Image (cartoon, rainbow, N blue to C red):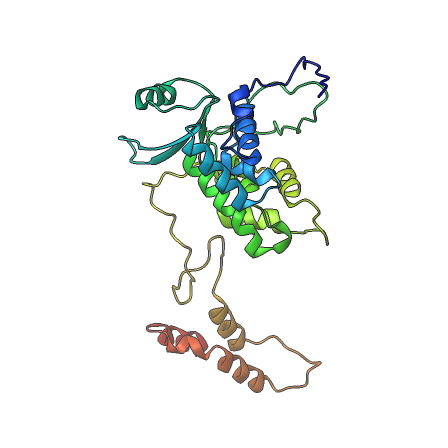
Length: 308
């Protein structure tokens, strides 16, 4: 067997021969581990998101991960924060098998990029883009707000629900996790999840070839300005009231409510020579339409007084 090997000058990873020739690891397991080890330290990938990009299938990837865990190349650990009580799952990948518990603990404690998180990222990865690769446009019209894990988790859930609302915007789990930091900026600006879904699903083209790309573009281009924060302890502004019956009106509304306005117009109806109907008939019809006002407690006396 002849070999022709050219050492790469950039974007390469070193893999031990023991891993490549491992007798108990199949090709899917070796490739999954190599992929994880080749990621940069600030990568947002997880073993699950890597597996979704591989063509082997879910069952084969589950078996590959079990092989890696059995041979000591992958270790999983769940910890609970004493301050917040939040559970965190961390996955450690190694290019050599780890068996000693003390050695595994030291690897988890070391500040290394080999520990992958099991869920969505809480911060956006920042770094220079290699020459020749495409870079996404960045929306700098608004400052970047702080987006923590709760906002990112809410945003990811809202993006996954888009498919129920509009089938053309169905996203996979990995796609929703990748777009969650962008959507979290909307939530940090005061946008509700309902408003977010409406903004992303309104005015869709007949065919959406790439739901993830379409949503990413809208999340960047349509980012609203931050809304002023409202003091939760401040009392709510009182609703305006109808001068006739005293019932509350919607915010910003003025004047009498519709039933009171109808009664007022029936008491002094405007002339309508084109209709030819008697004034008394028009007045009686208006009173029938406004009859519901008489059923309100305390409103019938006022309505009768206004009519008489």
